[in-house]
Image (cartoon, rainbow, N blue to C red; front, top):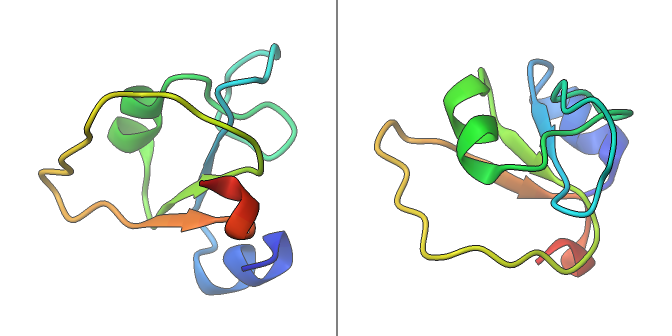
Length: 74
């Protein structure tokens, strides 16, 4: 799913990229680097940006929706 498609379908998406070194604001420009923080902050969905991300098993308790920027996001 392209970034534009994610934003269109989930206007209140927060973004996650474990490889980002920014301010961790959850925005596209400064995504969260911790998946748990992104899950706790999400409104519509957690958008996962392209790249290789390593984290242990995640079990969303509140119906969190995960969407990838593309097939390269997972």
